[in-house]
Image 1 (tube, rainbow, N blue to C red):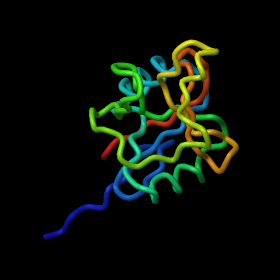
Image 2 (image 1 turned 90 degrees about the horizontal axis):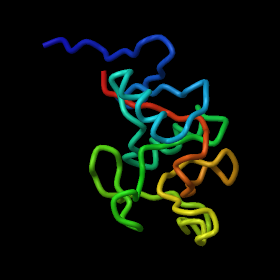
Image 3 (image 1 turned 180 degrees about the vertical axis):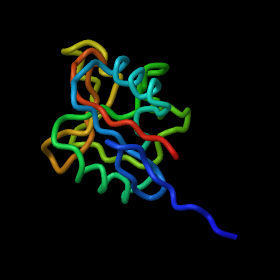
Length: 134
């Protein structure tokens, strides 16, 4: 039986059977998630270190990912409802901002620090990356 090769739409990049779309504009986390949903996708859920390493090659700005502890502080969940198992936190993160900046319930990949993760306020504007399975 012949299985057709998966492909992605123009502007999307394929990796390990999924399609990724890095945004060209910035927005707050909620806007980023809505943009991904409008594209039939969602903010990226990172399943393994290979995927994390791939993402590090296609982003060049601070970038929203689909991880949040909005429901319960300190209980990190991906937008697909799965709990956080693989983590790539920067040193001393997550720290909820040390209560200096209000709640830091959303996560981004840092442009610096070897593309490690940081929790930050969901109202900061930055780019994002969408993921879908074709």
